[in-house]
Image (cartoon, rainbow, N blue to C red; front, side, top):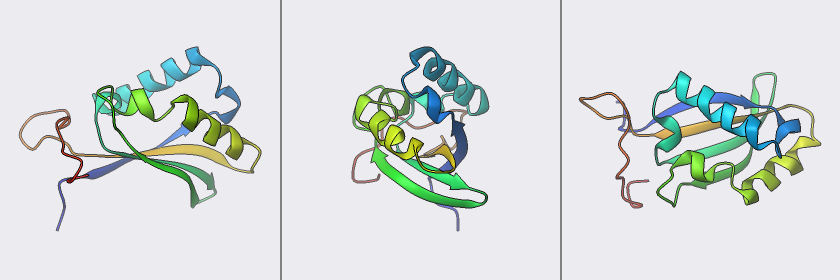
Length: 116
């Protein structure tokens, strides 16, 4: 049985560009092109280090502000988590767990913390 939430990703992130705001803006545009509306959506995000087919979570977070994933997943604190993982072998990837709308395109943005 499928639940109301779906996982999106992995979205690769160049760990050498963690301080490059222009790269990050472009990266969010790429995420939005792949899944329209996802950057502004609320939910759970997982930052992982991928080696071949193996994913090792580095950080798991939940959106807390009105800006959604784009406002939180690469906050200064989370950039530090990515920078710490940058010295490890592998590729940084993001997965986003969000709730698509049932009858329209896009995502539900008004989700209570209890449902997350």
